[in-house]
Length: 593
Image (cartoon, rainbow, N blue to C red):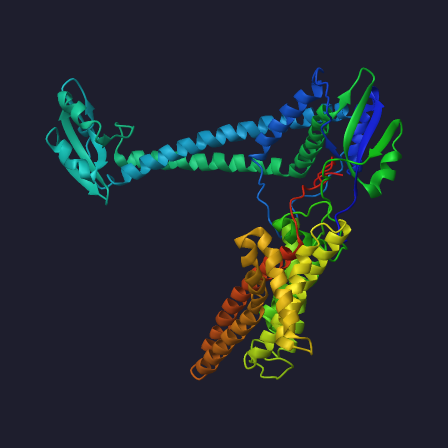
């Protein structure tokens, strides 16, 4: 908490014959991020298993094309399949037999689907063409292709009709906005002048148009039957989806493990592995037999693994959106977890809105398997609880709809809300300065004047405004001292002085959104009252639509501005991002166990 988890750089020495077994154990442990060593011997014959990995993953990609893999964020995608923990070669033998059969069926399905789709497109195009001639009295001699003449039915773009009139006799049968359908006859010698402007369809000239239409409809019916048969076969494969994904997961885990072998520094009989591990997990690593573990102080920046209490862990999502902290920096997640819901609640400030948002967030949290949505729904769930309390303090339940009075009133007393907002902003920014001061002290006083200069500025302004028996000259001196110190960064440094107060004024948005929510609610409720004079149903509609719009608008605004107050006004005081996330070698266990 407050700091990323402590990391140790380790070197693992082992016998080469135990290499594969060790990598498998490290993957099961899931706590080590491997890194490249300085010297690597890559002159080694690739494993036969690599070929199996490529072939089987490619087969699974083909199989997945016929599976319904659309994810429903409110529904668990698959069952967990237990795959026996056999050796990789034994699993490869079993998996190849299982996947080969399904792959052949899936490949046939894809080929037949493509063939049917092409045939269906051609038939539908031909049917649409013939449909325009269904009422025409077309005789057998309409279709001719001999040494002297060509005659048939055709279509042409309406804009091109005049280009072909001089080279053939034609009769217009039907027209649409862009296309004209004709019967034409032309001399063989003129055919080259019109062929690029007209489109013919391959039809049975021995049958009538009606008979051709009937034949095509019969073919489309047969295609539909074939499509149904393909769908039945796909459903049979769909039943194997869970197992297929479990096999894919196992193959991906093997692929990940084998890909890390290139990071090993090898001799004839031994290997050395270099990586990062959380300090708390070193004892688990040392329990593995036949290896020597050596830890040392690293000269490079370790990867970042956030460590927070369970109630704050979903808020790590907001920290990651901005950027992970540096290894020796402060992890702001716990402070976001405390501040974000308070800011959100003040800006939304309605108990009814909070209750509705709580129900929606709780539903999403319980139903979804999507980790990102689960984190976001948890954040809005906590924020909605804070909003309910804020709404009761502000006496707001759908605005003034219930008409009860409470401690604060954003509608009628915005000045009090303004004062509260500025006080919260002052505390929030100074807490950030305190964190920066703490960090600088831990770094042996390096750049300690940065946070002290802002504290000096605030103290000087406070003396000038409040007095408190302290001479104003002291206040002026503190302000001038801050400006002089900040001038070391040139014009930008001098401009940062008024910018500091601009950041403080930015917290007025807490009041602004609270008042905006209340005023919109007031207008909506007035509309409901007016509508009720004409119709209760119409009044109910105004109430539902109005408050739905207002709630949606202000929930989004409260979320965005709560992030902004942390990302800009708060983080600017102390936070340095730029850390790289800890990515250990581990097994994926989403579909299998």
